[in-house]
Length: 244
Image (tube, rainbow, N blue to C red; front, side):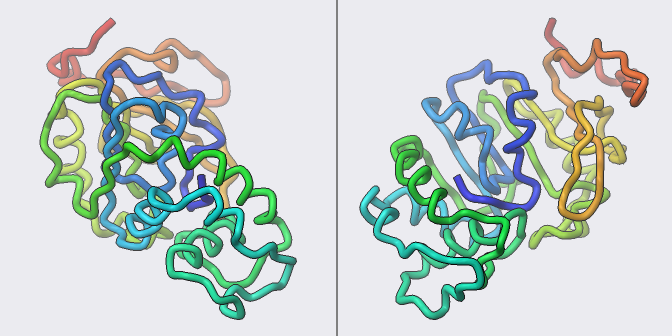
């Protein structure tokens, strides 16, 4: 719905579809996976108050609230407009794509005037969602599709809540202990789970290869490509009840 660093907008269609009626995103960000499957029961959790505040504001905003926000031109400074805090956050992320913090000056590569019309039409998707400020480790271990997209082990230093704040061994154990379907996002530099390569991506800072780990079998376990070698299951993985 809004731009954010590490958003899965370009690769969301590559991930397995949810096998459960409930989706939990413990590192919510811009929640592209939940937006794709918005009609499920959705729980967003994030430790970054700015993200939670923005989602909660969007959840209660009306279409007219969004459409009534000012049109902007390249170089405009949103601090010159009379806007509520939620609107400032929304516009601040949209006017400077791929940022970890909301900005004030409209970037030449963004089109806020088009974005706000799209956002207004999508508001109905998030009315029923539960949005929580908190840590991944505090979430009840309930049966669900867990879409886990944390700051990356290598390359996640740009997040507001950075990779340096995470114990990846602990996070890996936590991911493997979830009930239901677990989908974990990373890149192929990571080593805290046996990830499989998906697709090369050019990001704001460098080019990496997106990767996936799941406790259900997925298409990328069968892929053979000259671009990269799939990283295969470790001996411990049969204990994760991998499904066919």
